[in-house]
Length: 384
Ligand SMILES: [Fe+2]
Image (cartoon, rainbow, N blue to C red; front, top):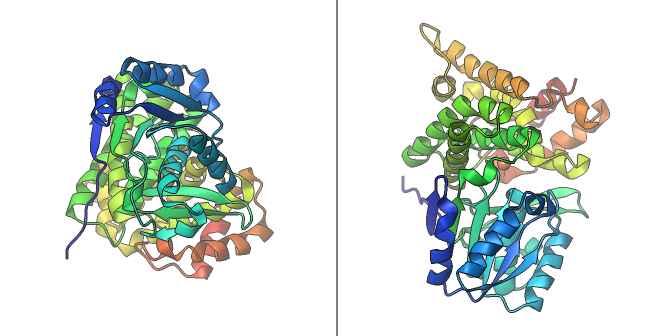
């Protein structure tokens, strides 16, 4: 089977990687840069730091700091309008998944026109966007290495996914030093999102020998370091592990896709306004229990990558240990354990399950075909 494998144009990583920004801006002959971020990242001092690097490289900078979590289609349009008001020839997305996704969206809409809703689905964007550099400040969504962007359609209360090679950045800069000020709750939620990317893509029907390498290493790094990164945010080693784990999980996700956890998280996020990372984190171990029999061997490998000792356990017991291990991690780092904590009630479940099975792009990419009844049963199990 022939598998395409995509990566950003160039990916700088490691503490101090931000130093690569100036030379790359010169490389791309940046004259004026449109810097997309949010208020949280700005108050952590990171917008000033990046703007300083841009100016030092001899380019002008226009700041757009109005991105909010889980950005809507309308917010993307507003940002695009601002971009059009200025004469910028390069876009930088700086922050968590939201500013990065908005940067991707603005980049392709600026050159292709239309609405982002015209491009929802796979490979529907006709041409290249404005050159974009993506710099994550969380670990992470992996948005800097994926060809996906997600926007909330407020009319349908649903998150819509755009997937295109044109969403990949020309340059990704992953500097773990930028993640030190991320608070414990966000570190936990984004770290579990990265773990979800690794586990779902590792067990995806589209997984292959290359994506497995990235996914298993990501699970190892996150399993070893997420607790420490949440507990003691200034720990260099665990922040570095998490930054790399997030990138590796993102690369695996970009090439093998994710499955039912993300499919179920979309309608929950859309209807209840819950964060992407936290919603995935809550659902992950519950859905793993349903998926496990789809590939016992791979789930057993996940248990080992998480650092569990599988010894003389049967294959099934090893796979069960993977689910237990993820439940324990999620509890230890303070992830909500029940959907009722999001304000979801019993009567909401059938509608949510129905909406989730309609996300066929992801449901078809799950290691086990889940029926509507199974999705419902799983969500009820996670309810209270
Ligand atoms: Fe995700």
